[in-house]
Length: 457
Image (cartoon, rainbow, N blue to C red; front, side):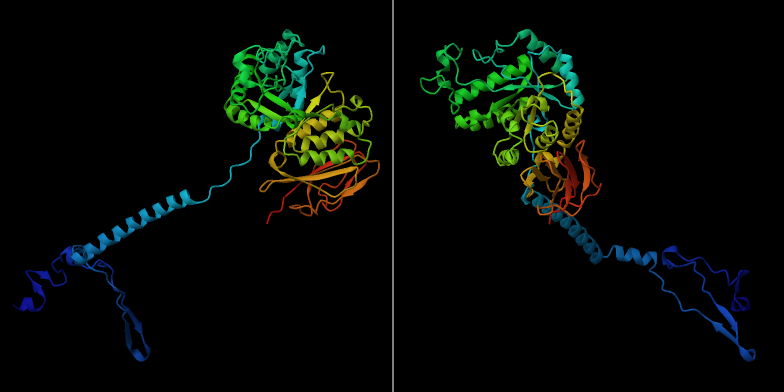
């Protein structure tokens, strides 16, 4: 008994107590209290006992709460609320996507509109390889052969050409993945035309005449077959409608729109409208004449295909110094130039340089799709901008006069104060690399292209 009172039982000291159950031990067990004895003055001792820290629940207590019906129901409720909220957010996201107004599709143009064309003259003695070499050097991927379709039979080659020469040329150009373009079917037809001699084609004509009825569904269907035949037989996939034909026949625009829609999967394109502008270029010496023509063309509802000879010796009144500026402006305005090169080769290195540079610029979105605004200038200066939201804009100016001039572009919409010089015509007086757009100097017979960050609010 005495031993038990002194804290010893069965020779075991009281300090070694029996182990406790794990489930009843606090989760903070094992943390020793920090007791510090501090000597005070006058021989006194002070014991500093720290405040007892918070101790969590024991494992046994936690298990009791885990199985408590209240906490079980609470956990189930929270899990239900989480998944319900997730489903609601998913439904809302789908609803917003479905009901939100759709963005407008990006603008597009056909391959026939995008790049300039080279007119290939079959009658020249040049070899097909020369035409291929010229087009590759200029970066042009489409060529134009006028009037390939026979006036006797829309499915046959024009007998005015040598079939062997035409086929050799088409073969050589097609091998290099160059696209062939010719003119729309001739109208009206002659009495010896295969359609005129076949009564089953009577619905293709207007009354008793030999003029095609462009409003007829029968005509549309037959012309679709004709153009598909030209692709499969001759690999010709572009057809140009003359501008005068559009003015003469009211339903022709509707027909070409329908044909383009039907033939688009076959990459066959009907282009409108093609015009020869030699007369306008012969009148370049008249101040303001070319400027008025350019503004009229830009205001047109049609996409114009300009047929002209880019080298000055082909025009009676055009100065050799004027044609480079004219070529640059036509290449960068809405429309597609058709470069007529009778010799089959360009001899003017300046013209070659301009075409090469402008072909690259025509791939820019602002040049392909952008709006065109003309600056207020003198009659001999043509200055305009091409802008499209979200893309760099371009300011272009040419001077056809004998005196130097200055152009202010900042009066036009979306034009900032400063731009970056992109291209300058050979022979043009040098300007700053970062020109102020309110005073761009243009020397006589010169031209510049300036890129800028278009400002949209």
